[in-house]
Image (tube, rainbow, N blue to C red):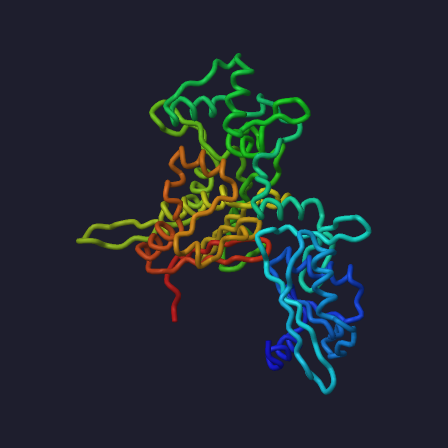
Length: 409
């Protein structure tokens, strides 16, 4: 890093990936800051800088060796930082850049007084990770699949056996146990990760409850969709419609495949249909109605939100918002660590909740290629009205935005 680049960092101040520290900081405090940055996306700690960005310089002897050693003994798993000494940032004042990259061993902990502590970065501050933070980070790292966790207090009777039977018999073209064969049902569902054993008792998994629960919201308040329709182009207290969509992800169907009870996907599509008006144009003297948004695109965006959202984020539903000029679908939780926006557009496949993806694929909500953004949403909107859908990744949510009409220049 050059002196010019360093001065630009100082000008911009501390943020989620940049921390300022004096060089007389204690080793466990510096380890805390490095761990917090590592547990986000990596970044840099600048030694020899005051909190207000002024340069105090470094004076600790053997500073680089001291930093390297604390990264080995005070951080677990140990890391090797990239160290750059920038000399004479101000006359007689040097600054050490401690740069760390997000590695494959995330999560990282600080080791101090025989205690391992996880820290996370929130804006320009570092704090100890809560239990919910840890769950999300372990899930994002791929070490824990949140959907395989048990649902406390749930039993087989909290799953809709009608939907389960429809899944095994009609969708999978197989067989299903008799309703009274409780042990057979429990064994079958455990084999598919729809149930598990907790404290010696068979209970539904989170994925099982989301897919087939009779009342999923009773156990998982974050399992629904908040559906809103605003009269204008901005959020407003005066909504045209405000509904809580709830129930299992999958529908209940008759033997011929016709839907008798909707799942969340159909409920969401119905909400859009009821709260948008088709447009009409003439083709060869004949009136042709065109829906405000193509059903295939809406369906793909809604299904993606349901199967890929971070269900460990409690107290926050998926939001489906209709405005006068667009539809927005927001999913709680940031993108998984390995996923980038460019990768999604290029057709990168990923699954935060693999069991949900597997079962929804059986229902043909998800295709086997798993490239709905590239193959359906983007070309679907271009063909429909020539607009480009927008994909907006943020720290706590991911938004898909579909435009009703091309923007006027």
